[in-house]
Length: 152
Ligand SMILES: CC(C)(COP(=O)(O)OP(=O)(O)OC[C@H]1O[C@@H](n2cnc3c(N)ncnc32)[C@H](O)[C@@H]1OP(=O)(O)O)[C@@H](O)C(=O)NCCC(=O)NCCSC(=O)Cc1ccccc1
Image 1 (cartoon, rainbow, N blue to C red):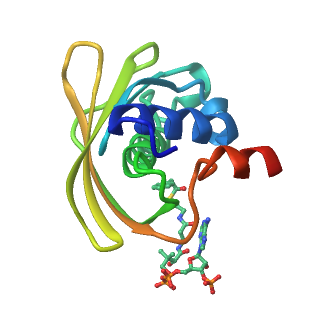
Image 2 (image 1 turned 135 degrees about the vertical axis):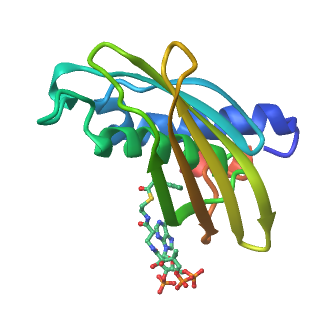
């Protein structure tokens, strides 16, 4: 994997993670783009996501933001988990809305990272702001070398 550019590495990490991420797949989320320290993920608000006030349940908005956070902090081929996060819901999302979560790395130092995620609807209306704190654990997402890939 040493011959990949940072952008190619980010894309390979996202592809590898998404293939195993049944939670993100089950909500029919789509990776719009990834780059080192950044990820954008989109999700349509479907009928099963609607809560008792007729709006999108916050848990689904949180999951969308959390997935964008996950893909952004795992763009360096180092297994990284979410250690903490907060969310503010700014405006309701409605049935049929297409929400996009934009995750941006604010800091990465040692094994800790801070990522801000903004969630917007298809009109660009801010729906939520999320901040995640990541923690790098041991392991890589991709095989380290063709030899390892062959023996996997
Ligand atoms: C890891 C830490 C955050 C800090 O622990 P510390 O002890 O202070 O630091 P230390 O570095 O020593 O940690 C070593 C420990 O790390 C663990 N570990 C090792 N490998 C893995 C691994 N592959 N996967 C998971 N954990 C792994 C293992 O227990 C190991 O202990 P051991 O050495 O075996 O005894 C811990 O509180 C934790 O696991 N929290 C739950 C995190 C969680 O589940 N978040 C889910 C919600 S976020 C989400 O779903 C979306 C999302 C995805 C991705 C990104 C963003 C968002």
